[in-house]
Image 1 (cartoon, rainbow, N blue to C red):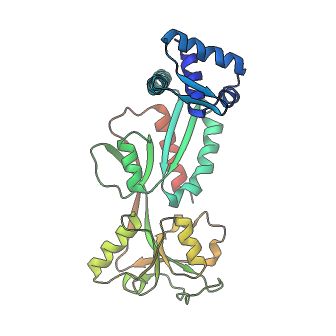
Image 2: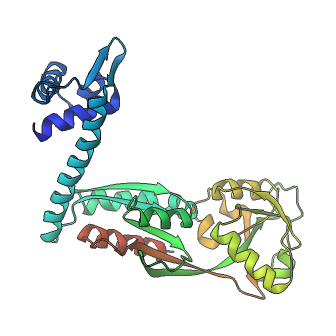
Amino acid sequence: MNLRQIEYFIQVAELGSFSKAAVVLDVAQPALSRQVRALETELRENLLLRNGRGVTLTDAGRRLLEHGQGILQLVATARDDLGARRDEPVGQIVVGLPPSLARRLTLPLIEMFRAELPKARLAIIEGFSVHIAEWLATNRVDLGLVYNPEPLPSIEITPVLQERLCLIGPAPTAASRVVPAPARKEIALKDVARLPLVMPQRGHVFRKLMESQAALAGVTLNVAWEVSSVPAILDLVLGGHGYAALTDSAIRTLARPAQLLVTPIRDPQIKSTLCLAVSAQKRRTPLVNKTAQALARLCRAP
């Protein structure tokens, strides 16, 4: 048994087809079939059931698939570790980004990898801060950006950026079903509470910040619509269905920012802290450090 045979078998098993696996692996299908057959002969087990529509796994095949994925992961980890000892950013990194930043940061981060880290691979997962923290703890992601994280022994955090929450509303020129709030430098939280708000569901960091401060101020927020997607919230604001409470950076990638009014909230000011988060249980590789530096730089960029 060798690594190539294991890799070939895994591709066939995951794709359910020798022909599809041959295309992905860029090998001739007969050569691929011979390697898998040699693996079956050595193990004295039928690993795949071949039919007109492709292949399915036998019980032995399912067990080998689980072992094989673990073997290839260990090999990749060993390669990354040896590269890291040469202080070379190599291997793969999985980065978790919140929806309010994913669209703005994904393209420049990928461009940085192509230009500066040609031997490294990048995967990006979008999720809310609470989910990214869970993914870090379970090693699903290697590095993440999270808002106002709860202190956890399994995660190391580094503050990157602090922003005030603002009322995001339709500009007077935008088609609107709500009366645009008059332009002003700031708006009091008690006045925000009177407006129809489009907010994420309970548990989202911006929703928690707003509700906790509203409770301390003795006011109740008027939540007209609950929408988890930040781009969808901004679409509803542009459509005149209400107002949002977000940071200024959340609208930077919007195609029509001039159609929105951004007014900082006061009495009290509500601040959100964006942090870089990594697992406290894993050694920080040169690739993690390089990616963290790039993310911090991109977050602070105007």
